[in-house]
Image 1: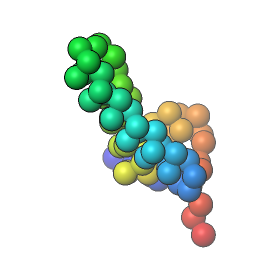
Image 2 (image 1 turned 135 degrees about the horizontal axis):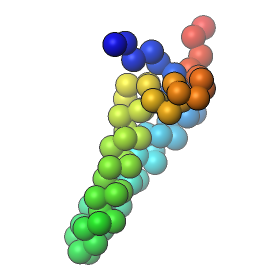
Image 3 (image 1 turned 180 degrees about the vertical axis):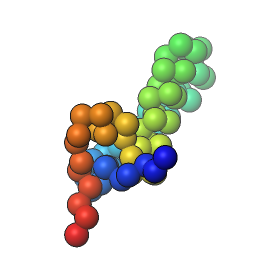
Image 4 (image 1 turned 90 degrees about the vertical axis):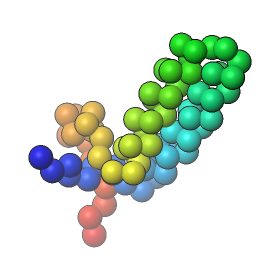
Length: 71
């Protein structure tokens, strides 16, 4: 199975920034003792960072959305 790139440009940058912010929030929540919030933030952040790194989003693929320019 090939992961055809469908995330690019500003969308990719936004996912990377938001994913990093959620990872930091997860650490902060864990330190404060909010384990459930930390787990949720870590899962969401890692999913967004995966999307940014691989340039593939399963939801975009299901919906037929492609923000990747192939010039």
